Image 1: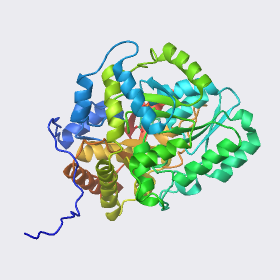
Image 2: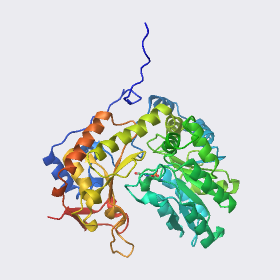
Image 3: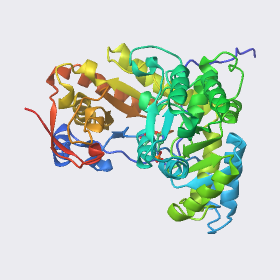
Image 4: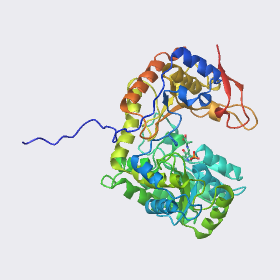
Length: 463
Ligand code: F0G
């Protein structure tokens, strides 16, 4: 026999499924009622009434058989458990940081870091702060500055690393405020609020060298570090032959520490950590951990959560997994853009972001076009997405409203959960909605809390 080697064009899900969770079909009439009862706010829907749930990629992934087996063999000791040491060893191996402080999720690591280092009058530069990061910076009286490159704010502009920080602006900020007012510089990899866009190794190095020159600590928000590593391998010269773990290790080597939500590239349903090199800061952080999270060898996680993360961190760096992960997100992006739908280009790592302002020019920003589209996706296909627009960002502290910079609908893809036919269905439903976009109506707010209104506001369509 002389069979030729087979190189498939089709990238398949690199797993088989042994445990399944049924999803429930509803009729459009049922969905109309369910959405009305939920105050036209998808956050207030019961998950069982959602067919495909793309609200977030955070904590919604499927665990592997290896993770479950580690979890069953966990050590639940209060102090010094084996599960902690396995977790610590994995984090140290991948990040190279000396001190590993477990937390229940990403924002808890942010709370500990910024409570320890930031004070009133300080500024924290970042490419783009994620909402919780910004909230913790501001909660400590500091100012959160977003210094992403201009391309990162233009949905249609193609750039391989739209998550990069503008280093001229960074230098200017350091000059303006002085290094004493800047307790840390941060880079969010990938840049979630900017469309899940990656940061190049060159940019990481440049930011690091500026930070070192001025003796300012440099931290990475590492939530999607593995996806970022894959983009570097695919798009940056000199990295084509490197493995994702080599790339990740190099990236962390330029930093002094990181915050992490293990609910993303930790492949876990809960968990996170703060990892850092500074002994003094680690000591202070551990004291605060005891106050807010728990003893520093579990920090708000069960032993089995730490096992899941210790294994998940390596699984997220697996080449076959990353190839499928990034390709399957791009596959959805291509289907939508080939149908004429404007999305943030190029497709990010964990999500596709639809430009609702483009799709619904007849709905003014303060009648929430992205909210309207997100609700229409639920009515059409039982799909739950999330608005990243004027409902999320429009309400000002003084109670007035102003349009958000962009009106986006994020379709975040949970890890290892949906198959290609789910994605085909999803694309069909989005395109079906797009073809009737002139039917979509704006919304008005009926009741809302004073802050973070998108989670609990009730709205009504404007007839
Ligand atoms: N940093 C980034 C870049 C994030 O995307 C998130 C969470 C956090 C920090 C906070 O982590 O949720 O574990 O406390 N992002 C989720 C999302 C919520 O839907 O994008 P957490």
